[in-house]
Length: 340
Image 1 (cartoon, rainbow, N blue to C red):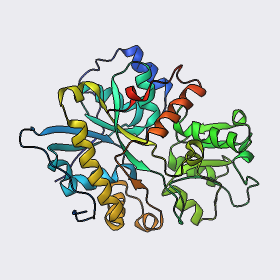
Image 2 (cartoon, rainbow, N blue to C red):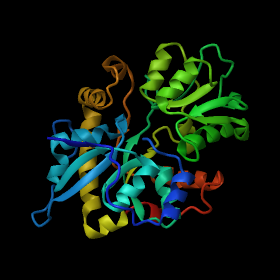
Image 3 (cartoon, rainbow, N blue to C red):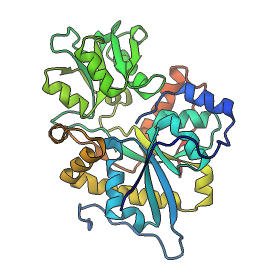
Image 4 (tube, helix red, strand yellow):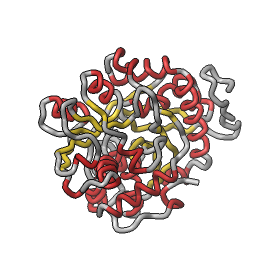
């Protein structure tokens, strides 16, 4: 049976100095988000001399964590000797203290939070990918929506406009600024406002913003109501329509105390990804179950591509954005950002 815990307050105190933690949370606002039945590749399983490792995974109730949940149900993590509990709690930068404290052993988030932490000598490291964007006839995973009658036809036209993004000083801000700049617009003229996805949809419908940068299934819901998509900002920012911009990370101390855990985690997660990618019905049902989103809308929305592989190019470019936009002074090398 899958064990799920909800967000908690309290617990063990952070070993991280308060000043460093405060700086991290201020600096990056990214808090979100073959033979198997599904046709995926088989896993090697935990060897007989490996003890079971109990882990708590901090995730958001979103489609980003769907493959993980399916993998737990299918027993892929158990096969690797991982006793995994899911904790719906704060993700991204806000999850880093819980990973360091041992409240969580692995957490889901955007790349920016992990890069910013490492740049401040906070001992966390990216261990796997999670979910990728991809081109799909039904639409991409990330879209930039404007009203049907808007004179905004391209990213350059957003210059001087008010745009809602999910978070500032991290990926969502960087993606839209990069897309505007690459289209010949003025990214410095953007008026960016931070809003949760659902609130951004309301703001767009009520005319409070000129555009929103959003994800599925919100994008599909808006397009069904006549709103237009002008493009996929992360695909443009990374120069890659299949970019993987969401990752899992662990504390280095946990990895050191559990030799081989990264490989076991990646094996179980990739089997989970293969299963999710091969069984759209099961994937959509899991998304509906965990998010409570209307099943008809989830049925219409395109699904992402799940993968445990880390998109090294995206990590490198995201680190560059953090420097370019003044969040960090220098980008750490990939060897310090991604576990071998």
